[in-house]
Image (cartoon, rainbow, N blue to C red; front, side):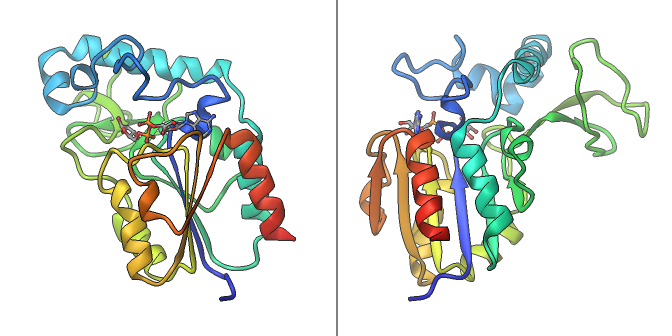
Length: 231
Ligand code: APR
């Protein structure tokens, strides 16, 4: 089958070699916190200062990391692939765009964006939110990180669904397959008739669902795969 339409899903593993910690490390903690203490609306309601500081630190840390060979290879594919291509990332870092990807959707939000809890504005944001800066649009309500927390609806699901329905090839890179709806994209893509490939450091929960899998570091495997695809 000739491949024309490609959907790529990335997770924390694509940024691991840049020095951004993944979520489900061996200790089960994310930067020393239980995920439910920092990544739920309930946690934010209970302890907004802790949650704002946590994301302020993650946002500031982006200034100390750089895109790696996997991000750069995906940006090259974006620039050179003549067919349709959509890169869907679960990551809230900005490394795909800094590498040059443009056909990109952040389904779990972005560290470098704030979200007004009153008017819904989502302004680009570089600094801290813990000092309770006013919303630049309504000046009335509090800003929170524009991050999709557990229990909230991921962004861009209509556009992602349309791209998967039209996909000839679905590739999942650096994700454990533990969090839905992203973990269900492989089944969806297969039902839509796409070939499916997993690229991950190690077998994931979803490995048996893919037509093929390549296991090793994304910084090595992704540039090799892109080079094959571009011939
Ligand atoms: N190259 C490729 N894969 C890697 C690398 C690497 N260098 N390092 C780690 N991995 C793999 C791990 O083996 C693991 O399977 O990346 C995966 C990362 O999994 P998670 O930490 O669970 O991250 P992710 O799948 O992106 O999490 C999904 O969970 O908490 C939420 O909203 C958050 O978007 C996140 C979602």
